[in-house]
Image (cartoon, rainbow over all chains, first blue to last red; front, side, top):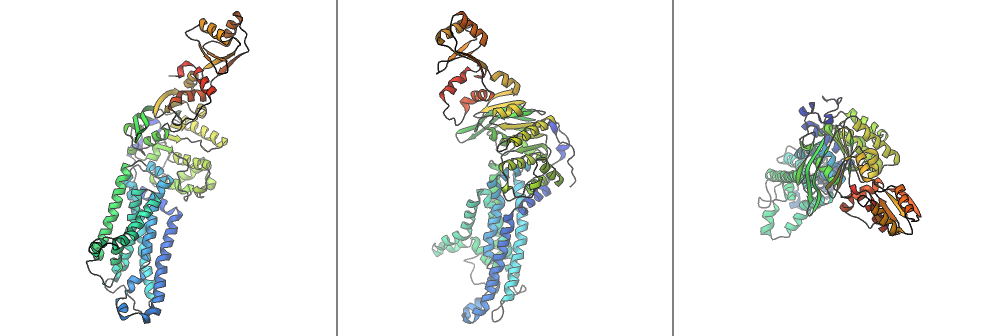
Length: 282
Length: 321
């Protein structure tokens, strides 16, 4: 902190040293970090993510060796130990979406947004700072959980079940990429909340895009649902965490092409959200 | 200094603020007065750059809000009570605001002490009463030690002690040379707090000037007269000075006379042999003067008792335009 507040700035309308002072990006980032860490919903949602992701890896890892004897040879052959231990990431995708939404919508719901914008009238800067801070937290937490789930899951997949190691082809991509998908979906949710501004509405839209849309598309004829289905976050995420290639390019993009598409969704949502934020009254 | 020029805001068909212009000078408390729904809050939000005006400009120290370098160091505002995340502590609410404008953390403790919330600084704001929420909002406004302050209905939800505290705080801030704009729908509160007034109704400017001038101009006196020969008396009084005397007949048969002193009325009655059953001096309160001024511009008016409605026109002629 280099500036102290001893004099009374700009009192009575005289222009003083204030003219040379400006909002600093690092200060706005720090402000957003204080906001994120000072509400309990952050801790609760991150804790729920940890319990679900690692808990499901434990359950899957602990039950499969016992069931191995009853599995068909085809099922044993297509068994993907990496994907199985990362199943919990699907729930993490839902939970991190809720957190991403709350980061934005709680400001509108409580009226805090007016304090925020009075302090930082540059609205794109506010949204950018929120995005950066949330992205940092989301990436770190998602990656830690993805790797933790993988290692816990593999340690439980004992003989006769097969297990994976990070050195095998595609495994590191599945684990690290699975975590990144979670983080990017959180950013997509934040963008949705900037557009919709209501917690319940944004969560409905997010869950719709994640879980309801696949069901709707599934109901369409194959000629339509295959080319459309590739674009769904669900299928992009599934392609990322899959190590054994069991489906062809007709039904899914390659892992990183899908991921790039997912990033584009997030950028689009945040871009539209930022544009609306500038245009609309707070 | 706050300057508003031709400020206009429309919501679909409704005009919330209509070509509003005024200037708020430093060193005094300016009351921003108007009935509920008259556009006070909308005007303040436009000054703060939160709402975009459809026409006109609002400037603080000569510049639009959005171009201020470190806004919290130039302008402090309490715009609504309890616009605070209920899960965040008072300390953290102020801390994130302070951090954004490079205000040292020590200042957070200072303003918390100033508004008397030090003891509950770490408590979640959701547990605060309305009055505590107001105090936290005031603390946020004072955080950057700004030269310009805006308070939207700051005494709402406060107990008498709190109201007195706010009143003294506002006066103290103005005495330090700051620009203080405080909105209210209560004339009586403004009479005690403000030096200057900006009165609006339905988004339009109705009056500006000093509180003292407003009181002198608005709170007209009149004399109530009861007599068995009221009609005769009214005739004689009007004959005495038809230009300045104004006589209204109330539903209960009494006369309300303005423009003549009570003793002159008594003399006229005496010299004409008219008996008087009552001769009393009445003064319209400041609140009545304010209601009279904004009567045509109240957004949602209820039915006024007839006698009350009838009595209002008696106030001095100056305030009725």
